[in-house]
Image (tube, rainbow, N blue to C red):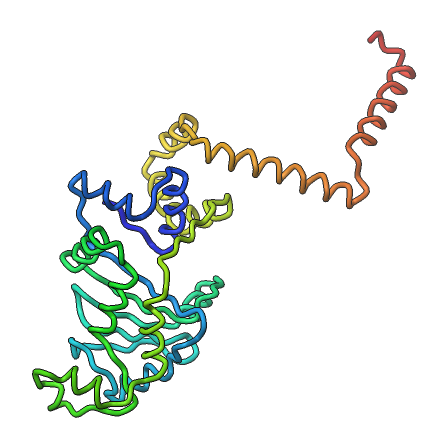
Length: 289
């Protein structure tokens, strides 16, 4: 079982890249070993502020949207960022302020807003199968978004939503929300991108402190700490990890030397002074060595 968060995905992409694998090749290999996909999240990033989350929330509250599922939920606020969910598992469309979400975590991002397709079990398998067969993940994802959710600049009557041909009337006769219409049309030209992230000592430390330390404390208090230390001593580092350790050591030495020189300290000068003072002491003490 493998579960990847957003940050985990970026790090895993780096591992795939080192093995000459794309996401598609990885999924194909997983299928060969009878792998199944219980969840798949597809993110459509709005880097240009096409969407205004206040406008999306207002349109939702005023019933100015069409969706195959009338289930929706709104979370957040203007200061911390809005999130709007449409539908329920196995398929949810989520729209939220990505930039404010990252700011709450103390992180930075160039993404303004994000539209996510959260697909579970059969829906996830369906999208992956389409990807395998037609190699059109982006186009297919945007077509799903277009088919399941649409915003307009006019309210729609609840009774009309119960009709059998509601969408045709809704799309054809009501004025669309310009931003949503533009996003879905531009989506056809978007590309599936990878953003592999280099692992760093700082990122490892941050992850350990946040997710691992509590578990280590349990092992320590239950008498298993020595096993952890022994396992660390016997651990075999990968070539990439060895490079990381070496690079960090070189960087630490360089920074330390720079700091010492900046403080007018010089190792060679101090060593010469030590040798001279030692020789002078030995001479005065008349020691036999």
